[in-house]
Length: 536
Image (tube, rainbow, N blue to C red):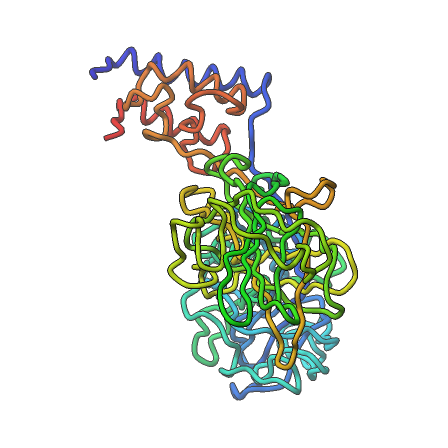
């Protein structure tokens, strides 16, 4: 499509004018931002001969980095509490570290941040406020105190580094040029810094912060700098980490009732054509005289959770109404074949009684039994049910009547996610009693979906989130015609005005890829529209 010079200028002015009006009139979605101070920092030192030394500055007001003229090397350590400051599940977008340089040599030098690979400590050592290299403290370091990081020790004097001078990634995550003028210096956001902080948010145990070093020139070429630490008495001089992030999508919860349940029975001599499809109970475990029982249950996930959702947690709750005394474990396994729930009913008699209850009832057409998926026409491939040998969850059930839960596990979450994404594979779970060595009786009676008291029915608590929708064509193509041009302007402006809420095509208005609509998207849209960018 040909766009004249005049129409291009009009397009540019129109979009920018419209956005200027919106700034005053509308609230546009933005990412969240937080500024953090370190939860620990320290300095590690070599001596004047570049030999490793157990010197530190855990509680001192400064962090020293570089080579002094006569007193060897210094490296800084700094860490921030990411997981305690940013909601779990957030997406890190930008990271910037700012430190105040309060004293340094007359040389400018690049200072690098390296991700630390092992934990380290901050003790009560304090090298004071003397000038760099002074014998009174300052850059000369102080004798390490218990728990301090030193050139040799990650924690003095019980745990050493694997490598002298600290264990850290060889490739820096960011570099900043630090000059000779006292003031703030920043390590601006890089993909590596973002990756570091994202990792520390998702896996807090890996958060060991950054090591700060320069190129560490040869002896007698001093390029050391003194930065202010988290203990500095002036708050604005302390290190600060600005993290911009998009919070996780809200977690929704739904309680799903069983869409079918049943029990399969066997004697100690083999399978029996018994079932309990319409009965008020589900049995699982080993009885004293009548052999093992296995429960079956399934939940309609696809009709209860929106398509495209991400399952966050899944918890099964069953009410145990009768069972042997003692605590026994029951495993959930994902079933690999479909099965039926017929009209059989073993009533509610006491477990193992001849009148019904845990003894089972003759199978009716369509019932699952130890041998049949659908009695009497379709068989399991394996007697006792076809199921994944890997356990999805284990729950301990005691002897007291009440509700018991199989708490959310990675296996349960994976099962429910698969059933949501591929409903045809939803065959539910089988409940298998784990019989300890020497145990002769472990069976429990759980209440089924046919129980007259609805408070006792099986429940599956599913927590899920909806991830942001994806643009079907390309960023900027608001009307979905496959090209970004002047016909998208009005829609783009409306998306900014509304923040994208419930507006068709607004997912394509996110030009800078930060999952929010803001002024940062305008320049990209104007550029694409002026070029009549095709989505092909």
